[in-house]
Structures are given as C-alpha cells and as structure tokens.
Length: 226
Image (cartoon, rainbow, N blue to C red; front, side, top):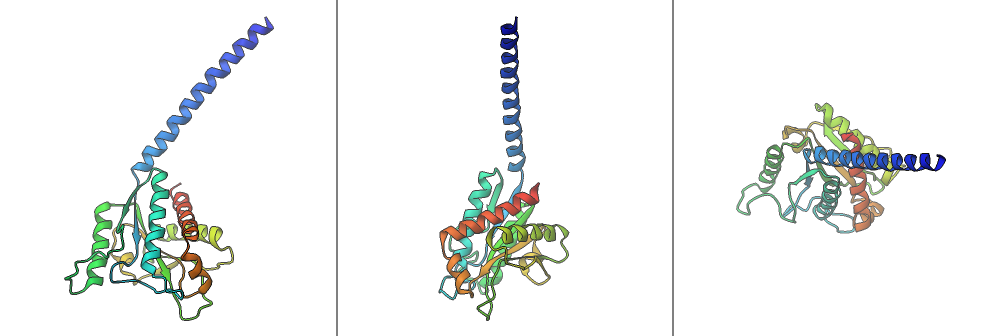
C-alpha cells in the first residue's frame, strides 16, 4: 500500500512539474511577444564629416558612439525588443551636396524617430570639458517631458551603479538640444563619459568598457520597462 502511494505521488509530481514547465515556457514566450511590440530607437550621435568631440587620446566621438550603440542594439534585441537605429555605419544622415549637413542630419534623425513611433529614443554621445579632471556619465532629458525625466533618472542610476559609484552626477533637464525638443516621443541623451578626461577616454576607447556601458544602459532600459 505504501509503495503504491509513493508511485501515485511520484506520478502527480511529474505531471505537476510538466504543466509548471509548460506554463513557464508560455509565460516566457508571452513576455517575448509583448517585448517584440515595443520599439526603441537607438541614435548614435554624429557621423560622417561630423566627428563630434575629439578625445584627449585623439579618439573620435562618432566612432565610440556607434560602437556602443551597436552593442546596445544587440543586447536589447536578445531581450526580444524591436530596435531601430538612426545610423548603422560611419556615414552622416545627409547628402554630400547639402548646404547645411548638420541641419539635414538632425532633421533626418527626427524623421526616423517619428516614423518608427518608438516608446522612447536613447541617443548615445560622449562629453568633453576644458578641465581634464571632470568626468562621469550623465543623462539629459527634455525638461517638459515627465516620461523623459523618469527614463533619464532610471538610466542615470544604472550607469552610476555599474560604471562608477563615485559619480555624483544626476539626470539633468535641457531645453535647447534639438533632438530632445523635436521628437514626438520621449528622448534622452546619454553622455557616456568625458573624452577630455584621460582615464575615461582610455576606457571608452576599449571594446570591454564599451560593452560595459551598453550593459548599464540596457539594465536601465529594462528597469524602466518593468
């Protein structure tokens, strides 16, 4: 009798484990499906004739931006999110015959973002300052965007936690950046570090640290989407 009960219990446990595993798999697939409906635009700042900031180590901001942006794209696509990139190579978003390449480039970025209809846009940049000692990642948002502020603050927390806990910078409102003002959905600008700081510039030039930055931004995005 005892042995019979043990057999029955074992069968019940196996059946229960099967259904639990199946439901768990369905939940994972459902989450992936829901994520697949979420579109995020990743904007790699500058490009083409516009190098952006030039580092103390002669590294060009446009190149670092693109490398981090592409790493972030890969990480987020692995999470099942739909990602649209404003640029995927070293070229700017303008015609060579353009009279004002910078204006055309910025307008085209805004067009891509508007057409994609994302929940938000993350623009990757690097900072610079005359005083070499200044360093630290910082996120900017449009001052009139409540969602932008929340996203920026979430990203700032993960950047500080994963890159430099001694970084006391906070997410900051900005009313003048073109991309922040001219996009219909929330947009934030992530300044990943200062190319004018020798230590940070050296780190940002490495694939390892670029991947670390991308991981930190990804963590912030996933936290915001919870």
